[in-house]
Length: 369
Image 1 (spheres, helix red, strand yellow):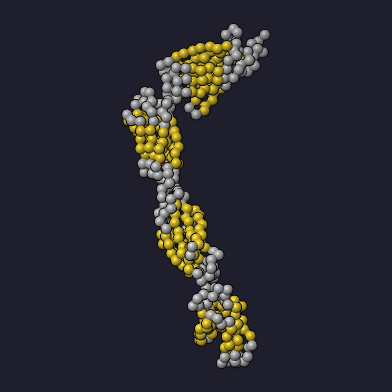
Image 2 (tube, rainbow, N blue to C red):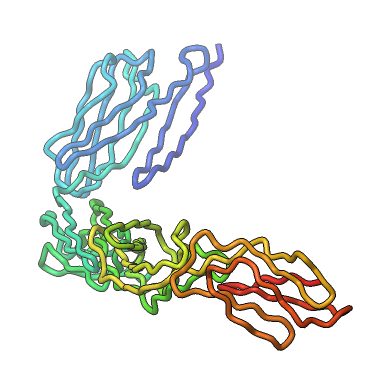
């Protein structure tokens, strides 16, 4: 009978944990067995979990740090073990071996894990600052406080204190703040990170508000403005309101610099307001009055064409503005007609001559022949 000793090494890395496994297999006696060791920790304990090895009758567990060593064993029915009374913020190397009834090692695995520290990291945010507090860590002589994304990860060293005030931040921005305990040998293995969004900062009023009537549509007002400087990364909402007597209508949109108000009454003066917000509080209102355009006459045509005269006709607008009138022009002639007029006879024309007549209220309409 030939007995072959087969050895294999499995190397796993995950976060700050390093795991190695060494397995001895004897041909014909045992199936390939891996412990698949995993560790979890608290402030003063580490719990080891592993996969059952079918031929194992017991498992030995050992652990070491710079100053501490310990070991224990459990029977083959156990696949977990908790190591207690450990120092906080300390790296321990844990080894688990699976043994058979003759104490031969069937499989072994080693992994490292750090105990935690009761830092209780706390963040309190304003719009441009974050106050950071934590509890002291055993054996730490200083703390590195770092945050991103500001300035591509800034770091400040805190000596003999457990708080720091981060300033000059941007509103409405997510910051990841890390506190790393330090001593003479470097960083201790119990850094803690938390994220916090800075609060919104109130937006200023819009600049250079302009409200103009549309030149072709008598029911439209064009509203435009220069946006105020954006506070940090806050989203700026714009509330546009138009007021006629006791009736107020509003719309609110994000990150815009103009808006077209539609469905208005022709030849009507509206009060237009624009205000901004980044949270629930609105800025000072910017106001301007504007009058919608005059509705144009339609169906501008002619009838009763004679050699020296012609009758022009048109349909008046649905809303006739107070004080409005028609302006009829052709060649060098310009005449003003009352708003009640719906047709007009032009006389003293030259026979066999082409004329272009223009009828204007708000916009110009032309009929030519």
